[in-house]
Length: 129
Image 1: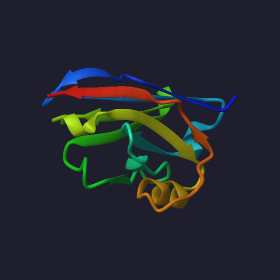
Image 2: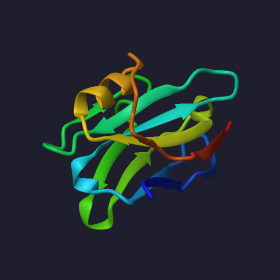
Image 3: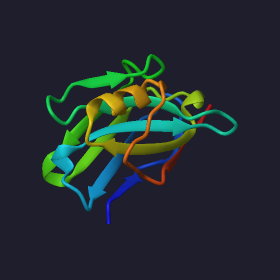
C-alpha cells in the first residue's frame, strides 16, 4: 500500500520548535518529490515547502522562509520539516504529499493547483501565545 504517515505534531509555545516527520512506504521513495502543506481551521490549504528528489532543491513559502527547513533521509524513507520560531498563526494540520514529478509538486506547493499522487492524513500543530 502506497502510504505517507506524518508524526511529530503537538502543542508548543510561541517561539518554540517542532520537527515533523513524513514516513513513506509502499513506493520507491527516491523517485518521489515530497512537499509539506497545512490547513488551519476555516482556511484553505496552504503549501509551505517541498524538496526535489533529483537534486535536493527546495522551495519555501514566504510565510515560513527562514524559520522552517525541509530535509530528506533516503535511508529512512523520511522527509522532515524542522519548524523554529513558531507563531500562533502556524497552528494548523500539517500534511505531506508526494509525486514522481517535481513540477506538479512545486506548482501545488505554490498553491497554483494540481494533482498529487499520494497524501498523508496529517498531524496537528498547535502554537500557543
